[in-house]
Amino acid sequence: MKPVKVVVYCQENKPDVDSYFKINGCLNLNLQEKSGAEIIYKDFGGHLTGDNREKFLAECVDADVVILDAWTHPEDSYAVTEAQDEMLKIARAICSKNKTDVLAELMEGLHEVAVHTVAKPIRDYNDIRIIRAIKKADILKNRTYKTNIIYVVDDNEDNLLAAEAQLSPLGVILAEESYLRAIADIPVINPHVVLTDLMFPAEGANQGNESRHNFVGKEMDMGTYVAFKAVEQGVPIIAIVSDTNHHAHPVGHIAEQFNTVGKINFFCGNRCPMIFEPKRVKNWSKVIQSYY
Image (cartoon, rainbow, N blue to C red):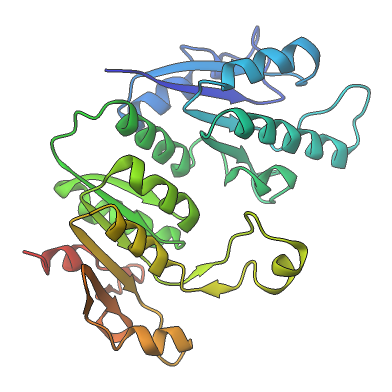
């Protein structure tokens, strides 16, 4: 089994003092236990300047998962905006060399800042997004899974958690909230099943100023293109699963009128199976059961 390399940067981490971040510390042990993966773990602290910055970037070149702080102070400056912008520069430098999963802590666990234009936001080191990233890297590095790989795409965290809980007896569940990441992942992961939401907030990658102003963040039927990518890659089971009401959006009105188009099955609007207690979430199990 090939280990997953995880690189962690926390500005307040003092390697000689803070045992939480050490290789045998709570963070590394917790990540290994929850992900089930063997991990090569590297931690960095202090300001990412000079040699420390170069060493950090060198470790990130072959990392599978990188976890960043919300900021890092550039030399001779403690200005908040400069510290946040510096972290963004480092995240971009990582992504230019390595198409890895980059995650970054929210400022005070609440607020997105500059780095989150590149990195996935995480509330803290217990955020489920970290475990998902490690599991995905483990699958990509160790293709020994004999069970199904079920790839679920939804921008609602409750729906992703529901998918992980409901479908885990059926195989390895990979949960993703970004349609762009899903479209990139599907050809590499080759899942057996792709289940995708229909409506997603439009993402800003490769968009000009006018597009960012007019379209980014608005709900669009991007799940259609996730499904198209799955068809293109020959995924056996593909479904668009959307609870968008036919009165709530014109796309919801149209999508509800489709049952099957080629290999894509539609479970939209009133035909989207739901669970209402204790939380309103999609009934992913019922979708899968309809195939058997």
